[in-house]
Image (cartoon, rainbow, N blue to C red; front, side, top):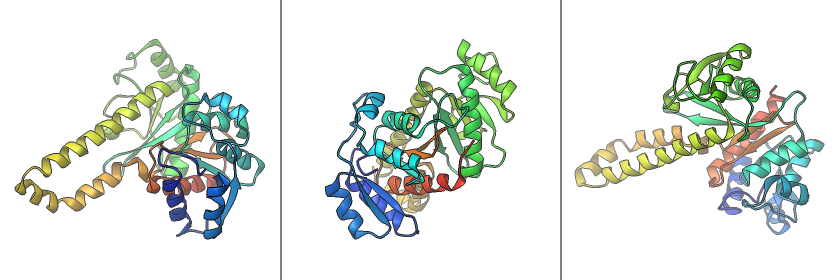
Amino acid sequence: RMHGGRDAPGVVLDGVAQALAPTLLEIVLCGPADVVEPFAAAHERCTPQACSEVIAMAEHPANAVRKKKDSSIVVGCRLVKEGAAQGFFSAGSTGACLAAGTLVMGRIKGVARPALATVIPSPGDRRHVRHRGERDCKPEYLVQFGQMASIYAEKVIGIEHPRAALLNIGEEDTKGSQFAQEAHGLLRERLSNFAGNAEAPIPSCDFDVIITDGFTGNVCLKTIEGTSKTLFKTLKSIMMSTPLTKLGALAIKGGLKQLMAQVSPDTYGGAPLLGVKGALLVGHGSSNALAVKNGVLTTARIARTGDLI
């Protein structure tokens, strides 16, 4: 989807070009005709799909999806449903992507609520899949979230025998709200790889799949992202403060770049919506060209696995 993200269309076109270059991937680019058609004409294996409408970030997601049938989000999801495409990536409105995935692609039989699975990168080789659903969840929904996220972690991320946990304020079974305690009991009973509660810090915890509701998960993710940016900004300020610290920074420059790449969300490109009939990846609103490239490639990788549940 061309019209997505705060810096669209420039970074989206750059990211798509980077995704096309080293692969044999074929991309259908959805967006305004005056943008997608010239780009497709200049790039092999890219087909334009002109769209006359755009869903803005501030619009009500479900209403916009129902009214704007020729928006790039709706058209992209419809192409997947009709088999003209195998996956869809967008860095536009997350709510609209969720609504279009559910209303246009449709839910997989047996799935009560589709939900997003976000990869939380950590230093080293460890990665966590945080699965979050809608803001007002029922405890039984979290069981399905855990099942879908565990399959995604194993089949797409490549984590063997992933350990799942419920995001909570403590490790003990009795911790948290009534909702959390009820969810914990259901997960313990119905999810074979459930290993208990997970509390902060998430990036260094000993679990592979973190299960939570949409509101709590989004607050957690924003906190992690904000803290990481603040730490790197503060570290850079300290290391550039004196000639001596600048020399030290030069010595560890390569290691810092490697660390930043390991913890950057741009490495994965976005979060898949699991539980719908097709591969749908939702990128961050501030996605850069690298994030778009990796989002497109991850979407293709998910599509190749077939149905995830």
